[in-house]
Image 1 (cartoon, helix red, strand yellow):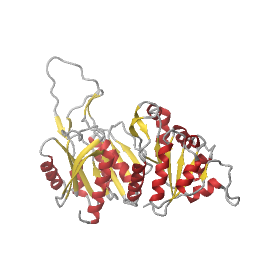
Image 2 (cartoon, helix red, strand yellow; image 1 turned 30 degrees about the vertical axis):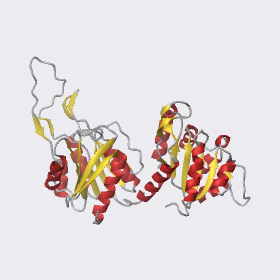
Image 3 (tube, one colour; image 1 turned 90 degrees about the horizontal axis):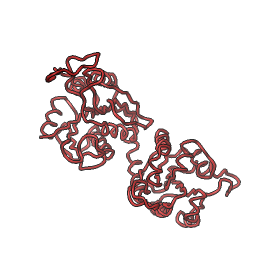
Image 4 (cartoon, one colour; image 1 turned 90 degrees about the vertical axis):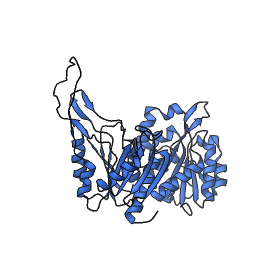
Length: 402
């Protein structure tokens, strides 16, 4: 993936600059053509001469140091780059890029560049969690830039926490994987539902469930990263979908999710119902708050419409995927649901299992397609699980074997 590729490495000022030496070296060893741009503060940690020796190319540090009179250096470099890596990316360079500032060689080149940009932040844990830094990172994600999250551990400032620059090998591995996946769903339309629903009793009380929506949002992000145009129908969750390829539709009740999913169903290539929709709702609701009365309270419930089953009954060319969150005999119930609801695949997990429950950042699932082929995906981050599930869906659509 990197052989012969023109890669610009942008280096800003932090103690993690020393890791950028290994990053540049590994990129060159992989066959990439590497040019380095450093801020003035970065050059205080490691000499530009070091990166010149490692990259075998001149190092850019000054906007006004025009090495070739026939070219404008930062424009020429921006046009040359096929891929850009910012490592380490400090809070300062994130702020400049998010707000369109250009006061040095690195920031002017970045504003002129059209290549994909991968950002590997590195800073103190409290800086990384500052609202301004979080806002800037969100802005950059919305602009289509890709983040390689920092690791957690002992930091140079003495703190222990998140903010340590990811290891160079992992940065390269992440970029290669992302580049390989980037076009897998190009031109495809994907519909995803996520989160819980709420069924009101009165203006202040409702019935719901423990779903956080994280798995559904991870699937939407992964599909968008693979090039799909994604529609995300989301129940009431505290999550944001920042990818520009995602169109979000917010709903509250099971009835609203039913209508939204059916309204968006036509023209979709892949439909994944990851939402935990209420199976029942109160038969009677009240416009005023119910007052406490002596004795017990009995609330009668009625069934909601089955969204997944109804989609299975009307699907034509859509590849329809359901989720089965169970606490006992998950595979047995999952396979039954797969057949009964006319699905093309189902994702089964035991939410009672540690690491696979609601609201967590990890999951453990089994993917089952309509030929009853089972594939177990072990404990991993939901983003990783999402990407792996989509790869299997793509494989099954193409009719390829495992």
